[in-house]
Each structure stands twice: as C-alpha cells, then as structure tokens.
Image (cartoon, rainbow, N blue to C red; front, side):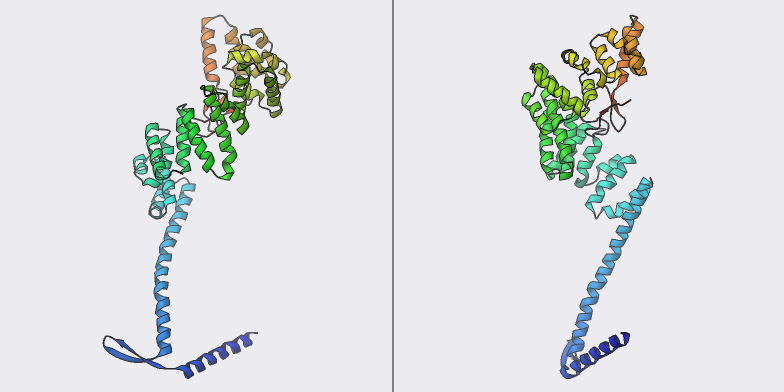
Length: 372
C-alpha cells in the first residue's frame, strides 16, 4: 500500500513538471529600475508564498499573545481557587484589559482584598456588580451605581435585581414590584419559577401595606409559598370567609406548610384567636413548641404548661419566665423572646419574623423556619 502511494505521488509530480515544461512562459519584472526575466510560474509561486507567509507571521504573533492571556487566566483562576487573591489579581490584570467579562471578576477579587477604591475606579462594565457589593456598605451609593448601569443598558439583569433588592430592604415594596416585573420579563427560562415566587411574595407584602386585595389574589394565582399562604389567611379572616379559611387550612397540612405559616402569624393575636379552634383540631400534626408559642401569645398559659415535658429548652425557658410574677423573670421573658429568632437564612443570619429577602446575603426564599 505504501509503494502504491509513492507511485501515485511520483506520477503527480511528473504530470506537474510536464505541465510546467509545456506552459512555461517568461515575463519581465521591474524592481528599482532593474528588469528581471522570470518564468511566470515562478512569479506565481513567489506571490503565493509571500501571500501565505505574511498572514502566517501575523497570526503566529497573535497566537502567542492569546496563549499568554489564556495562560494568565488559567493560572489566575487556579490561584483564586487556592485562596491566593493577590496572586490571582496580578495574573488577571493583563487579560482583563482585553476581556470585559473578566473585569467584573477582577473587581470582586479587589473588593475581597479590601481594595474598594481600586474596584470602584474600574470602568462602566463593572457598575452593576459594584452596586451589588455596595449594598452591604453604602446603599445610597449602590443605588447610584445601579441606576447608572441601567441608563447605559436598560436590560441589565444584575442592575435590575440589585435595585429590586435595595427597595425590598427599604420596605418600598411597590418599587420593588416594578423592578421585579421587568426581571420576570427578561430572566432566562431556568430561573423563571424562582422569579415568580419572588414576585408572589413581593405582592403579598404590597397587600400588607394596604395595596388592595387584588395583590394577594394575584400572588396566590402566581405561586404559593408559606408566606403567601399566611397573608392569604389573614385576608380571608378579615373578610370572614370561613369556608375558604378551612379549605386553605387543610391545604397547608397537605403541603406541610402548617408550622411555618403559624410561626409567621404569631405576631397577629387576632388572627391566632380566630384560628384557635382549627389549630386545636390538628394538635397531633403540630410540634409542641409551635403549640406552646401560640398558647403563650394568646395568654393560655395553663394549656402551654401541659406541654412542658415536650418543649425545647428555649421555649421552656420562655414559658417559665411568662408564668413567673417576678419582675426579673418578666425581663428575662422579653429578652428570650428577642433572642429566639425562629427564622434563619442559609447564610446564618437569624430573624424573629420571616423576611422574603435576607438582609445579610440578599438571597430570596432562603429564610426558613428552624427545624429541631
């Protein structure tokens, strides 16, 4: 087979030489006032050779530069993954001049090292990210950065989310809802359901601020969460829609939301009073701590005392302080109530009442009722 390939190659070479011999013609070529007589095929070969060599030389240099950048990026990410932020910064500084997306990552590295002024001095491509990071330190400046980003790119999802978070933390739920509507229109398919859940909880907050029953009805249609159910129960009870309250109550137990919803309702004594009969009909499906807290809130101390042996230490201490008539114990009761913090985010920040968005990490839906 190898011999056959050699014979074919020699045949092609012979044919090529015959073609040149039969079609050789000479042309005059002038260069610096000197004329040369060259075979046409030689001239053509030289032309093709130069046409190939010059671009090849350019792309070789270009490739060397790209390889250097790629190597710096690879090494920079490697050092970052090992925890060496300053090394990562030095390696990524050169390639970040050429790649816009890398500047945002570099800004985060600078920020984590405490080089906030350097991070803030970076170009407009990092404004939205810097606005997000500023939320923890200076919210006025964060708002400025995020709005500046939107002025240049009205579909910047990071900036829209940052402003939504900012207004949610300020309890300006109407403005938060405006930005959430835009986010829901622009977000990618993979996070559509999450954004619907966020919108539902924002609408529930708008209703609580007196926004009208249309908001809680739309929230229930959009997506139901324990918080949305708790607000919806308040709405139904305010209208004395007893049948609907019973339906929703049964639904909570089928979904396993009953504990979270009741802890969310603990601040509303009137609502707990109206629900008491339904609660006591389901005591077998509720934890002793939850029942005790309800009884304490409703001043039904004798019923709470009956659960004493089943209570956790924190709730037991709260109960004993409540039952005592001494002023010191009353003070302890208030302190324990403040320290109880039954809701906790995945970032570790704890709360006494449920919040749709964590003020520590700005994540939505991560504040959950403590278990155990």
